[in-house]
Image (cartoon, rainbow over all chains, first blue to last red; front, side, top):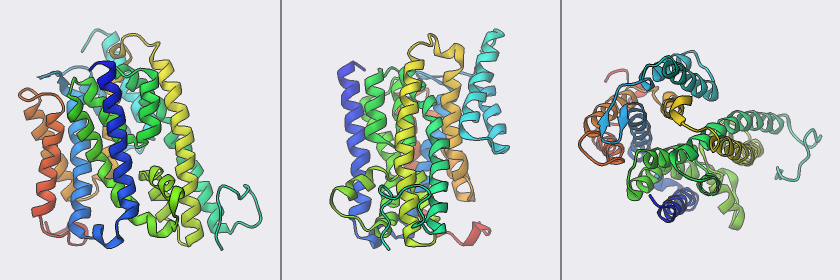
Length: 106
Length: 242
């Protein structure tokens, strides 16, 4: 993306996200109280984040690549299972990938 | 007893114990959340945004998941439309949060717009966890303002550092982004249905990465979740029978 397109993307997405927040504050409460709406919204969040994990771990443009990111993600999963704080999880994963690459793998 | 969080002083005797507890909770959440702004700032410049774009995104969008998603799609070479759509879809949950906190906050005009901007996972969670109305407001505003200030400060720090890093892969920053998404989804996997949808999302997006443009695998996963959410039966307690 060019700088101009990137700016437009940033601003448009920011406006959309603010509009979504404001809409919640403005609509009558019962509109969104429906169990199905709440459930679907929660599931969409899960699906998007799970998919982003996959794309970020094995994606490389249009190819699926297995490299140092995969063991690094496993390290992150172990850290999360041990209830490590967010920033620790992220740093451990980066360290694992960086270490493996320094050793010449992935 | 309307409590104005912005005017009340820390340690003031006018605070009830509930309000004081909500403020302490809000501040600790703000510090913890603010800290990982460093990783967002660094990853954003690595993804190709410059420092002003990173700060604009962080200040104006102010929703961690959506911010990480937008830079993730940009880094993968996705289209602007896919980037906006993914960030917006992740922002839909904030609409539900707004509907929950709005009646509790009772604000109008510009304060309502400000409350909307500060409506995120953390401020909603701390707010609704409180029992008395003054504590709800104190928790929401302390967390919202605290996260906003610290998150953006640390994003700036990360963005300035990220600018000087050189090859992001040598630092494992691509893996850090994956770990960030994993950490964001982890606490949402409590129900069986959520784990099923996550598994479907993993399969669908892994299958689509080689065949469709960047950004679309993520949107396809969201579509799967919409289908599951709309066709599946209402949750029974604990979903133990499914």
